[in-house]
Length: 226
Image 1 (spheres, rainbow, N blue to C red):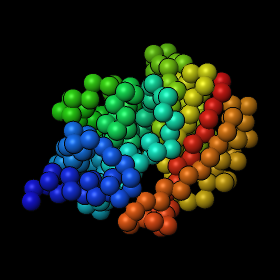
Image 2 (image 1 turned 90 degrees about the vertical axis):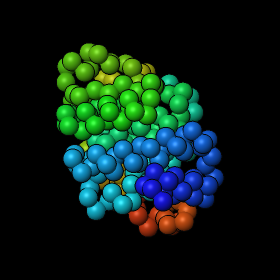
Image 3 (image 1 turned 60 degrees about the horizontal axis):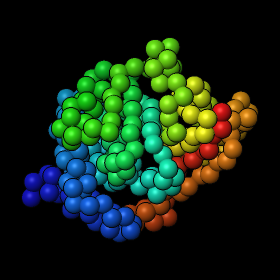
Image 4 (image 1 turned 120 degrees about the vertical axis):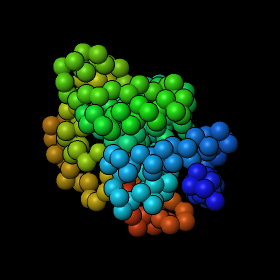
């Protein structure tokens, strides 16, 4: 069995077990993406070496799984610190009607992500090599997004600072994080409370290997008003 076929089987099993039904074309794209990242990872550190064996579950599936908790009426998202294209590329595959911008300041990673989006024919994505806090980026994308996503390790207070100039009047911030988020949220709330309409923390539990969220992955979803 070749690598892509192995990934395809893993994906089908995870999605099926968790009541998610991508079509065959989406599944092929996911498997192709997993193969592209694995091959590129020998040259560019997109995913930690010890984690590459779990790329389907820990990166591709979990990125797609977060759409279970994100509102349907999203037209344009920004993926801050996309790294190897996570969660932005899986989001764009599972929600093809959403347009997205993937940004990272590491040129080698962004070059790889551009290659992935071209090979996967993801015409709903734009890839930017930049810092989201730069004047140029803010000028280009101010008031543009109704969803900000991130799997990066930046604290919430920093994600708020990045997000506020770039969001529409009503938007969502969705970040995948681990551990106890209460202190981190309190710090962000102290500074940005006027912008916060509602916040929810979802446990990212899934079958069969994380039914009680042993991996301690959470999605914090914050509804924002400008």
